[in-house]
Length: 322
Image (tube, rainbow, N blue to C red; front, side, top):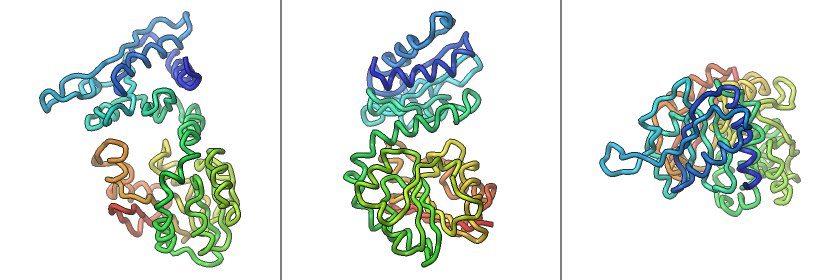
């Protein structure tokens, strides 16, 4: 069994074993992926925890007639059942259904040799048990080729920095800086810039690109920033908030690190619809980054939403610290 698959199934077995007897239903992914993953998961449980039923569901006929759809769309979570969704597969064939939304466990399975847990329902496990290690595994695999794949959007970062109103003398935290694509523009506009990311491989890529010459690079978890209260004038958060397991807690930590009247810029170099399409899905009402949800989330965590822009080549929400 590949090491990464063994790590993921061992973690899930550790989380789920105390809940036996129980049925686990695995769906999604490439043809045969659910059956393979279900077999690996079953093998991860010790012999003393065999009061289990591990099933692979290969799809049902959807309401459109003859369309392959996730079987999880017709199954409701229950106290004796855990739904596991494998995100991926050819053309993301299950993406339009609600299988992922209904599942208590979501696994990125686009590379079957490198599965990564992307969500475990908090009733099953606190995010501290899985979020950091799994997110590092997710981004570490992408760090080397990140700038090659996305490097042409650097001008969009520069424009976002301009629109955020970064000024000379400002202390700016680029939280979730990745390979540091925003750092040159931030450094040109501000006083001191600190780039923080929790994936060592991403920071290594930033150093190789020379971006440590314009900013301090710090290994840090966005949920627990190693800075004093009210230390920042501006927080730049590109591609960060939608990855946080608890957006309110994450935004509250960003507020703690920002002075009253300071600015939060939530940015992505494509609009939400374009990003969703890249991942083989469509937008749904009530998502955390939608305008009707983001405003209340920010208000709950110490911010006031001032502007919201979601166009094909940019998502930019600007907020002020109360």
